[in-house]
Image: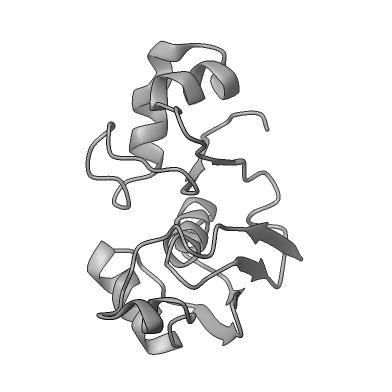
Length: 147
């Protein structure tokens, strides 16, 4: 079992009002978000338990499952994501963005070279639309990186 923490109030708001955004979204709203992002969630089940989302089942591949974890975790109202099995996400490396972070700085810290920032950007598409559009509290995938 894997468990990843997210900043509950820092994620993307899928709701209209601030009061609704404080609550974790329902499964169907999260599924719609995955579809909007173009992520193939076949074989994956989502269950919301308070401010935690449980992702179970087998995704098409490990990269897709990691992106699903990030897509649902980086939603306002979600504090953690838990997976039922570790085998397809055992090697996952995530980084929580802090104030002042850039993809270059994150690449230098996690991949050893600031010029490798495009790898992090690519690893986080479609959730990232531009390398400069990251925010504190956001969690990013680090491809082949170190914690």
